[in-house]
Length: 457
Image 1 (tube, rainbow, N blue to C red):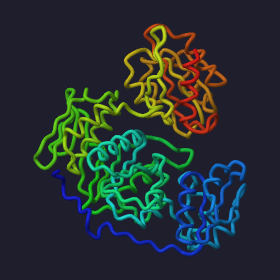
Image 2: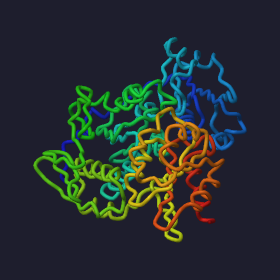
Image 3: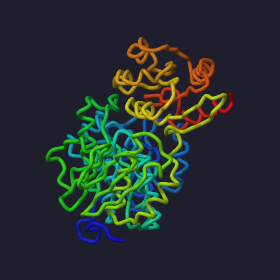
Image 4: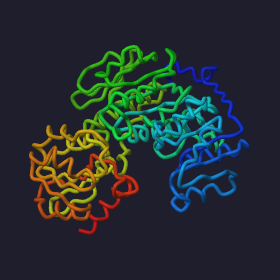
């Protein structure tokens, strides 16, 4: 396989990290468990703190059977943050937590799990971030690379922490990593060989003080790259001198001399004077947003020398992921679509953009601090709006005057209402625009609940 020069075997990828004897782990979810197991393996003295009670943490504590640690559950102890020279925080922990800020002032080193794992990795990393499309793109690239190279690690924010790769002593030619803004907040040396930024729109404004602060976190994916690395970004993004790596662009509609673009039903990849052309209809994924995801996957694959027939085979068979514009059922001419992963407004807009019928939109959940008004541009597609969750009043205030709007107490009521008003040819789209934590454990539980309700109609 011919590939671009990737410098995967020189000292550029050799990592070292000194870990002190005492380490504090903040947060005991999947990430915290992996970190604890790894530090235990190194013989470190571990303290774990989490605001949840022992009862709430039962599954995690069971997973730590045989691991020695001191547990502080139900509340944080300020002394723990000041007496441990290294703190490893889980992505869900706000870096503005007062105890963490005091620790940093006192000279305590604060990093995340991804940075910790990176200290023990020499393999080239392809890292994908963005407000929307991260998981689909990471999964697709992962499938292509596995088909081409066999033993490839796919993980990160997608659900399999990078520390597990180190913990299990895995050896892969490439690491494909989904990276969130929360993870990027706590990097120091983390350095992907290829850094991909899909898009940035307003999100997580319940965590960040401003949209600019959120964007700055995302941009850190490029922070440690050099001219020997690669960056993949949208043609319309202007990042100035922020990106030192060799940059490739992707575009919808605009032809590029080098990079990848979509035009007239075809996807083009142009690299080093060569052109590769793919039919868009090869992939069953729908929507412009998925066209962008496909373009990025194609470009990334060709950078690393993967042959066209391998890429085509994966594209043909990849039908997308659950809870992302997922067809659930068609009954009496009414389609039901589960888009529970739409935890922000831009994701819902992308789903609406891909609809070719009138839509009854079910939305609402835990508000993340942004505005819902940009949905107005799609109001000609929306037949009715059905709202649930904590954000229902805010959404009603911003959008209720534009279309027939209903408020229901829960998802059961929303689906029932949608079924009553739907007519043959309509689509009932569950695209919440909000996080799930007011009513559900996560977007997966929310989406599965929707599917179960629709299945019982």
